[in-house]
Image (cartoon, rainbow, N blue to C red; front, side, top):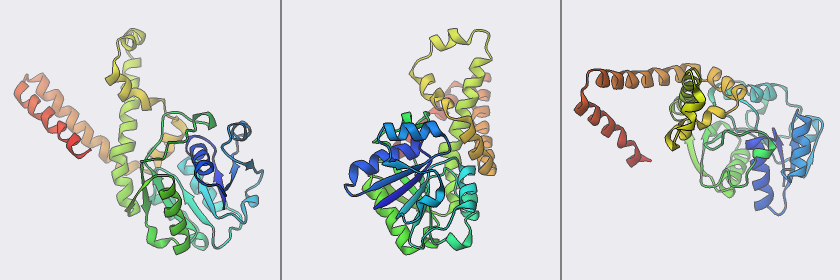
Length: 276
């Protein structure tokens, strides 16, 4: 089996490591516009070889697009000739606009997927073998993909230890805004609010696990998350509005010293962990 990966950072690199570990008969071929990423991907054993042009992907079984969401759209519009049987699988965090951008002639090749995993780190050095194991992957509008392509995508994701879920693209983007995109916006806001203080170093020196947990994802790539926010703008705005409403409620209860009501408000939030 030959598998191509475009984008050799955290997501693509971790996928390459995992595929080479679980399959004895796989050849992983990589492509990245960053020459240093290509060098590191070979050094770290992420891929078996790197190629210089996208045309060299012809004849592969699956092609994973592991680049930022705007880059996925650009790639889909400019991919060279792909064999009818090849599965093109994107790993983007938004789905509706990506699916809308797929040219009709390769729609049966395309499988829209969002692995619900990642870290705040980037580049080939961030790649880890266990990134996908035990995590969820959402496959969107799967009925529009060709039978062979969707079956191969499901097999690969299952083989690397992922749990498969199915959604329509619009529903996915709405849910992702609340559980993934809005938390990133809040983490960036928290980090900026601290950095505006007179002595942020003194505050951070006192920071415990709670602050570190909430601010960790503020280290994520601004380039990548700007594109995600742009593509999922309306759902993200709804999420931010919902959060702002709850934060305003907390402020009012504290301001008016309604401690019993505040306790009830906090207890209600605790029920989330019964679901998780």
